[in-house]
Image (cartoon, rainbow over all chains, first blue to last red; front, side, top):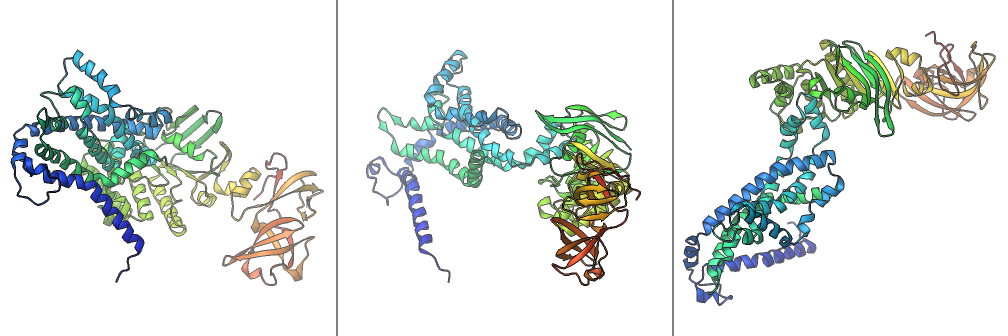
Length: 271
Length: 359
């Protein structure tokens, strides 16, 4: 029989404690989405006859349309970020373009409170008659997704041996041909992880969406916040909506978790 | 079919001169080996020919075509890197066919030719594998296959054997030479291993600090090294180099060891070079030489042995036939002499060769 050391038991116990701590609100929200308004007042209530009233309310409230808009914003942001970011990460990794300042400075915008950026975006959106459309939201999301995706990819590009690209150039391809046919395929897993990571960043943002597109073009987090009405919070409906918003993120995170660590440490530690 | 010409080629990074005024001709169909210690500019020279490294000044021509400034893809060269640089996402077949894809050869045609190249290299059973599933030797063959499929004007080899184990290295070396001979394509081969250079090359170019220290056939370089650097670099075990003076035809080292050379070299300060094979050892019972030495380590190589000797402060190396080892043991005193005519004299100051060797 395998012997389990005390340390291993302690480690497992600690992991379980952390998991419960993180997952408990999720469980509570899941329960809440099946409760009646009066049952919602009792957070200790675990066993009850479930009602689907909140889900019916949510599904008829246009939340799916908002989710669709969020998906459009996320996918567009990610598509642009991946195309521009992979080119940027490549030149930074291979040619030290912009020096160390660019490499680490590109994340500087992450340090600023979003409020600093949102008003310029709003002013421009008004000037272009684009307020309450998805366009300014996409641009605002690019301001944080693109740098993160770029930074994430630098480590992956650095891991591609230079000789591979040189070999392709000697074998008859242009610089771009070598990049496209040889370098890019090596970073595809990283590219996929960066795309999913970028998508979740965009998907989860509420602040920019709330200010740039508060009305008919509201994205999912804004729509969820809409359940906080002047007559009080519709807790059951909001819980159901939150679950709808969380599920894709959880699934995505599950698939990219390993690459996520690699990308974050690869970008931070110069080999 | 192409002769490659380097004309006054220099390369510097800022103040650092990597290659200094290189003039070199690679005759059509020949295999030239650039050899030297690391940092001597040999790899840079090869990369300048490939187009991977821009040239600071001078010109490189392949045949009648000046290729200076051209992209690698427009030079019609093929290269084998030290780490083989196989494309990890492509199968063996696709790796070999890859250069043909650049020439817009139809895919089926390219794969067919890759199959026949793989067949000639004994890779047929591995066609569907990815590089990571191959041994080092197999990866090497795939890299060679990829280089030969396009029948380029010039082959470039950048230390292609140094990642292989010793036995495989010797086998692959022979095979590489056979392929080069069969295809008759002008080749430039870079290595830091002088033995590899000796066995492979039609012409051997020894480089030092960005300049050519000596070039010629391996035999010319071995039998008449142009200076002490080449003398010490080429040949294994290393040539004995002893500082001393010539006095009326006899060499006397600074520490007083005498070798009767019977040279007509005028008196003065010199460095004497003696290959270990040419430093003869007399067994303890039969010493007739004026110089003696104490035996240190004896390393038996089979038919021969490397004997370390110390003679009044000098450390010398001799290679002795195993049959002549009798009576020789560590700390025994033996006589030492130089094989008549088999010595090299170099200027003490400049290190340049003084005597013309009649080999």
